[in-house]
Image (tube, rainbow, N blue to C red):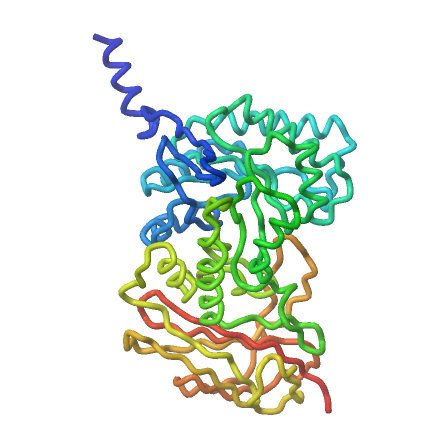
Length: 429
């Protein structure tokens, strides 16, 4: 009797997935076409990069997977994320943190490489049997500013180690762009990779040519893509990057998905749009599909459409480029210290929702980081402003010369918003 009671208590304490078998994930090639299979069924990745939050909305919008950048040994936290994914019907591409040469990791240090390998073996062992696991993503953009080709020997050894520990899930690494020389290195030094992840932004339209020119004929997932990158965008005369407004980004996402990602049904297995959430990277709005305060933007609506074929019942507002002193960001707007100027933005809401406007000015970011490394949000600038509530604003330019950026958010009162920003400089004339 006591034994049966003990077994019953253990059953109640076990997570819901404990009785489920690990997902069986395979990449199948038929007549030259690669297809990802999960438990015997075709699975095309309709996903986003995220840290684990926002899962419910991702599923509601038509997504079926998300990728992470690190797994780690915090078993309680990671299992909670995976359990939540399982409840939401989502599969997880498990990011594994691997040392970057550009951040000081030395791939000539055999002891450090071995410690890394053993740490990753333990991580994989912890989570490999969870049914929400889709695949393993070994490192992120290890080719970025990489000089030591031994990194790819290490990636190959990690792929072998993961396969030994977990034979049920594919292993990939992600690349910040790629060419023939890089693909040759991967083929020679990491041949056990099951697929690659490609990460392209404004230049994603060249993906078919890049695949052909590089000689990569195997399967791939687009593991990062999204708006035009800050390094690819037009610059002001003082080298501030010009960011697209929220509506322009949504248009680009739809176009890039339909014309490039969805169009490749031979090698492409799907994609993870960047970023289902928000982060500071040159600006607080450049890459996130949500505002820092949580509102969804037109980009989220666009992803729902390409994933499901249907727009949401209530859509985010639309917006046009912001103007300051009658000029656009590409006009390299320079203001006189302490003088008054008018700003104007046009916004509409297809559902007829009442719109409210929120204006701020930040110092221009001085960050020079690459690869998504952490940045701090620039300080806000307190200025005299008077808005008319219809997209018009009069502001008094800062007294201190320097580089700044004007931001506007347009909210519909239903959890949706659009945004635009404009860099400007203050200089004595």
